[in-house]
Image (cartoon, rainbow, N blue to C red; front, side, top):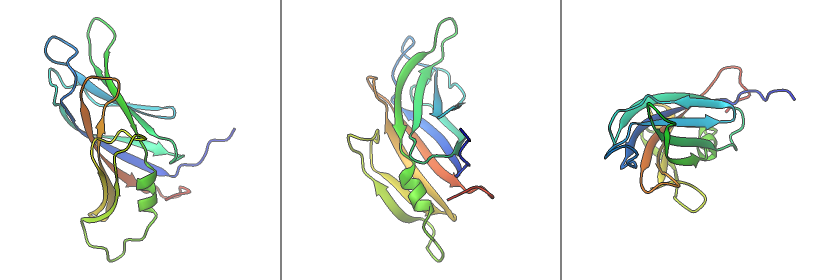
Length: 167
C-alpha cells in the first residue's frame, strides 16, 4: 500500500507537568513520549521533579488528522524498566479545521474555537485555539489516565509544508 502524502506538520511544545505521580522515593524523574502511527518522540528527563518544566518542541508529521496523538509519561529508572506515570491522547482535528479558515485582517490573539472537556477526551480544562503572530495555536491541559494524579500542559502549532496535499 502506498504511503499517504503528508498533510503538514504539528509542533507540540511540551510545556510542563503538574502534580505528577511519585514513582521513586518521594519524587520521580519524568519524561514524556509522544506517539503517532510509527512516529515516537521523547522529551529529556527532568530529575527529581513532580512539576517539571520541559518547554521542549517535538514535531510530528501528519498524514491522517483523524488519528489521535498518544502521550505517555514515564519515570526514568537506572536499574529497572521505566515506570509508567499515566497516559492521555488528544485529537488534532479541531486544530486542523481551524487552520483551513482564512485569517486575513483578523487581529492577533483572536480566539477561534474552544474545545470543552468531556468523557471522550482527556482535557482537564477547556482548550482554546487562537491566532497568535499569524499562526494557529492550541493550548491543551491533559489529565493523565490510569494514574493517581497528574496533568501535562501542551501547546500545539500547525506547520504548513510546501508541496504537501495540505492544509
